[in-house]
Image (cartoon, rainbow, N blue to C red; front, top):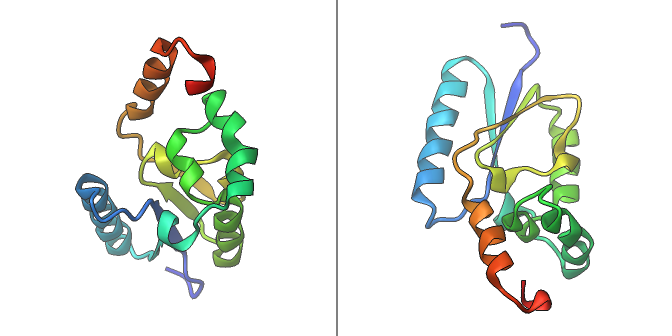
Length: 134
C-alpha cells in the first residue's frame, strides 16, 4: 500500500442490544483491517443524535420510504460532516438503518443489506384506520 492511508468508515447504530449488528460490525472491521485499510467505526445514535427540528424535517423521507424510521434517531448532516473530515475511500452502512442519501459522497458507499424489517412498519401503519396514528 502507498504512503497514503486508505480509510474505510463503518457506520453502525451503536445499540448495545443489537447483537447481530454488532457481530456484523466486528466481522467487517476484521476483514477491512486484514485487507490493510484503516478502519474507523462511527456509532450513529450515540455520537450523532438527531434533534427535534431535524426529525421533523426528515419525516417525509420516511413516509416516502426513502429512508427507514430508525434513521430519525441520528443526524445525517452531522455524520456527513464527519465523513467529509475523515475523507474515506469507502463507507459501509452496516444495515439500512445506517443509510441516508445525504451520506453519498466522493467515496464508494456500500449497504450491508440485511433485512426488510422496516417494511413491516409500513404494513402495520396501513392497517391503522386513523390516518394520524399511522
